[in-house]
Length: 323
Length: 288
Image (cartoon, rainbow over all chains, first blue to last red; front, side, top):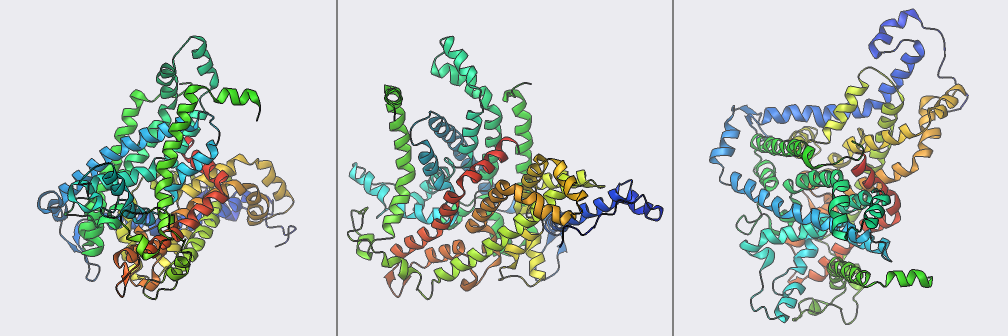
């Protein structure tokens, strides 16, 4: 294509195209021409929204009211899927409860740990860039490789963790992923290890670097202690960032899947059978697409409710500079 | 290093800070070191008790052996994941920047509504659309092919990329477009030759974020891929975990080598583009 090709003809408005101009919201033929190019460039995404979002959302709502195995057409069964979830599915409430327990353990550890690491990296120590990279690497490891790695570390008989525990005199170290009462804790440890130095920490670090130094200098002149500065400057100034990270961490925790599925297949004895595992199992192993869709909408409602609740709650404790 | 700088760093509480940072460094480094060393052990060392951290003689041959097991085609899985990652990344970057260009530079009826819908898709959990998408690809006969994994990326590449690119298009002065327009350049040409070269940082950021996500993805490939020759490396690695021996010979040390091979490209891409990547993450957190 040559730079001299004149695609745009800045002519006066041609009356016979007035309907087209009105349709695209333009006034002159140049604007109409421009708007048409705009549509053309947005076209891939418009199609993507229809095929991969809009259509599937409507289909999923409908499937939620049907019995559907993919092989035969969906049969409308009204609210039976939702009734089944709440009243007749033995794994529904336990998997939901377990997911909340995981979230309650994961989110505070990940947020407080990330903030601690970010504060540490913000002290202008030598080698900060190196430490930041090292802290971040666990977050980069593909989830399956991460799980395989930790299965070896936590292996009850030959793994290094239990070898150290035995050397320290623990006669009967835990079975970690292999026993029912420690599997959930082990999955939490793996997820916290992978998350704590990741994006959450980077966002905290950027937030810390955005706090004007004058505030700390003024506090120092007033003789404020390090804790007072943290409590009265860092925390309030960082509250929007904490809020953002909190929302993301809760959403991520409620969707936990890969580590538990690869490490334990949801076991032992359903000890790590989380809600998304339950959706996956029903939809893609039992081929109950209708029931799976209903479960997916229950998850969506929970996630959206949490996000809205947090946006509401944040008005009380998030401080925006300049407001 | 100047003497004043050194004196400043040796205050007692800074020594404590260094100790704390090194403690955390050890917590992050040890599992990585253990895995790397486990991938270089012999079978005997793998099952030694008490366990040893370092192999007596590093068995680099493990990396050749892990690529040549018939039932566990690690090389094929790596290739599958690599080309799916490449196609997805190119599709996302190309179409997300086109759509971002459209949102940033053109005005037309419905644009703002479209942009709001775009942002709204970010709040929707993927689980909701997963089942109908599976049904769609099933109808198309795409189950057990790689098509469901990369074709959707060519339809705009998702809200995050579009939003990122739009924000950066808005930072470029409009005079540049107008000047090119007066010179007779077409809109595709302005996009490709004038604006896109100025958008290298967000393009690289988006490419790295996309590539890392696709390379690591497990939830989509397990739904669509059934036969081992179609697996990506993540699904393959899980398959490997479930059959850790061939003909009675334990393959734990080779599993660790496969695990390291899965990690290396992700870490390498991150290290190569770290500057852009960190910027992108921070932008999504502070302005998103």
